Image (cartoon, rainbow, N blue to C red):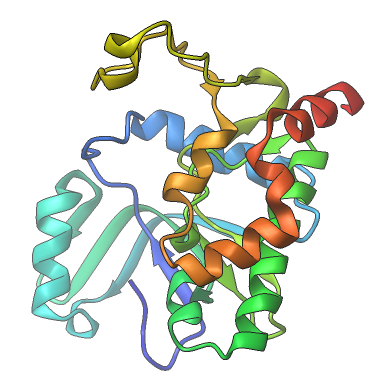
Length: 227
């Protein structure tokens, strides 16, 4: 949540995570600590942690209060005129990349999509795999730099196994709704990125032109070897 006149964002950890997310509160805290200690190469936003932060209750809309009571009841304590928040992170506010693209010109879209690909590659170069690389998890700064800010699923690049999808053995495999091959918890299939990273066909085409190597295991495995 944020204030219209304030250039920072307050981020809290939910008490429960809805599927398909499969992380715990402790794991999210560890991810933020990892980012705090790691080389961010200018591609991960700084976050500052606050504990037991008291804010004026009258600054909170009824809708926000209901949301906090529903999603993070263990993190808040409400008194007569204050709300005390057990734990939150404060980050610089940016325009989410997916929202920026909705109003961008063709040239602006091309520039930030190039930045998006560069951000992923520069993070990989310092051994960071973002995990959830959807456009909504990246922001555009006032200098048009694309920065990653959702740390729930990040990990060290060298901990992942980048694989190609095996060829189906028969028609049953090809038509099966379930994977016909074993998938480990750290297995990543880059060729699947093109199915869900970018919905807009024109933007997807630009990304493929500029950073199509991210859809292939070769880029990821070579980066692991360099690391």
